[in-house]
Length: 508
Image (tube, rainbow, N blue to C red; front, side, top):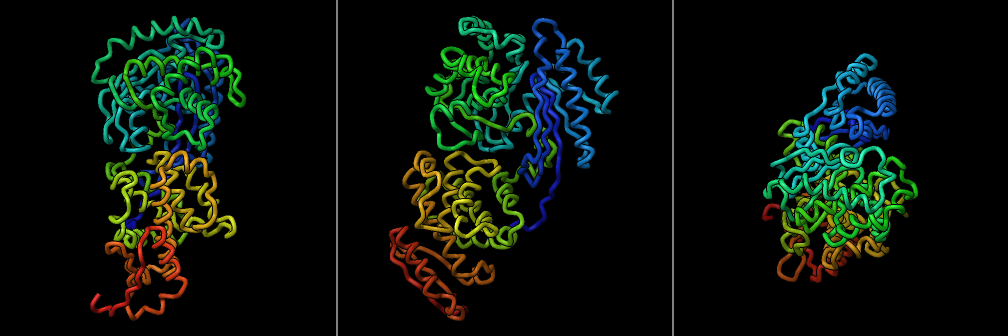
């Protein structure tokens, strides 16, 4: 149970990139933050850098208009001081200082471009904010730069910013480049990447940050009929990633440029993103690619948090925040986890012990989120809500596992929605264990009517092949036929005999 109030706030971030200008407003709760407003303008500020060394004139007009609008929105919403990240184009363009003065005169926004090293650090912080367990090499591809940074267990290691964005290497005419020309550009990229130190480059896991790589991954999901439509923590094996990367700038180039539903200004950066991915895979020898939707903007928010808030588990804070408005979150979640703890050791290890425990705790905090939903559809709606919830710190398998636990806490009979996702992502043992944990939650709720005081009267534990539900004699009237039915059903899930044990409270 959360014993002290966790501060809630809103923060606005303006990200002035070489291709896009974006305003994101975040709800911040503990170490968890959720975007509640997200607006993007593809201005292309850095499109002319390669040829002129200056910002795009049309890009400057679009940028200034966007910033005037964003500043007005921030004032209307009474946001505190905006966090502003102006990156590579604003760092290197000859006319950037003059343009920044113009921005200040028209909006009052006093913007100072961040250095390449600081951009790399903040992007890595954003990756860590999404999941502190991430370890490997992170690569953030923007319009006019590529940042590479090592991350390990919540810490940022070596990092570097390189002039390898598509506007650096190709220039403004991205749509006119053909496959043969991309192959030639690869030699230019190799010349920059080859001298990098091995202790920065070599990794087993490559984390990809940036809109071009996210969109390329979304195309991969559609082409491979991947059953979950979420990009955060989407994993692609090295062989598949290499095929995707080469396809993007060769056979798939024209397909990508005309991809339905994708803006032209974004689509034309994807073939280059494929080429860069191919080069990084060859150089790093990574065995797996992982997509991150968190980067610079999230890193800027995370960087404002106190060390105490940064050290919290963002996933658990996210579950509590997601469950706000229910009595379950306020009172029942932590005692429910205490009830489950007695039996955790007898459950199979389906991820690892640490991950299993935090997922069970997360399920307990989320166990009341369906109270306002129609009972005929509650289980299915809760499953979908949890599967796609804006909660950080979950792999796709963990997300599916958590959603399945909550689904099975409502029903053991009905077919799982998105069955293909469950069966493709989870092992049979994980599926069975999720059913058992969902059954434990259901048993606790049926036995106690969601009462914290009554839950303290029960204890569930396993002795060899017997599952025992213990309650004091003074509260034995709580042990109804329905409670015994739920216990027996749970015993079937866990392949155990079941016993009800009543005892005097003073000898418990």
